[in-house]
Image (cartoon, rainbow, N blue to C red; front, side):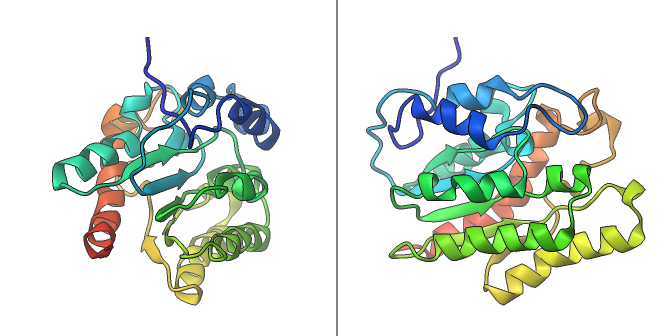
Length: 234
């Protein structure tokens, strides 16, 4: 039996949210990962530690893996080992585009968040969505988060588009993450899948979703940015 991790004790309403915000599967036709709905649909959460919230896609949900193999869970172990007093909440939804993440952000921020890691855009790229639309959605998420008092520290995970969409599209897609991070003074993970994307040994059979070994690398990239942030937090 997989132990669930609740999302602020909001309970099973999270299942309906996940269904509403997520397309019916990834662009490659795979089914929406049920482990995400399970992990955010547990009972009341009595953990009062400040929250590190992960907003993301199947890459963050740990598609095809157990919840403990997803990189946010690995990041929690790093937080604990470093002696920081924070809880990781993985609110990723498989199949979700940036528009879906944008539509869910009000609900996710009903309670305070200390740090928010935004991983979105992978499914936008698979669908060939206009990079400007992706940028607008990311900016809307950031602006909404910054209305929280005090506002969370925001970490933006960079993503890249599939090469088959052409060089111009890929360049625009890649550049927007750095541009947004600079404009809003965010911490940036340059490319979350660096050293993982395109490597058969680190991806599942679909060639898209990291294996458990690949998730360890994603956790390393995230911790390189998140660790110093937490060390500076009061």
